[in-house]
Length: 176
Image (tube, rainbow, N blue to C red):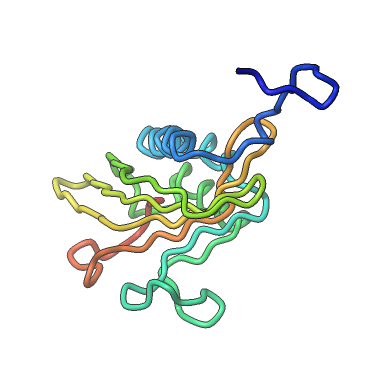
């Protein structure tokens, strides 16, 4: 039955009036993963808010604060834009030729919603293929997503790796 306003007229809700759902987040993360796998980094960067943070904490301190601990990656929107520019150019020797990747994003859970913002977790596995070598990165994403005028955006991505060391991987020259 349609919802009615106090005057009896039909209520119309904009997308931003409803809570962010796990299905909505799953679809967003699937699209985001596809952009990364297809190396469409210029499109991927548009999925981030201007105040976005991309964090990969130390393997032994997944809950550490990036202002107090040495992170593997602690980028803001500006440094991410620079990273994308370097990856799309020829200046990053570790990605020349570029890696091929395949991502699986599963077990998406919306932990908390607050207006147009949600705290989300998801498990991931990223396979990276380069120079006849395959590396597998497995872990958990901890996201803060927000609803923008055109859909969901990433405000924060904390990539918690379930690795004991980066060996044999050794590098994170691509975007997890």
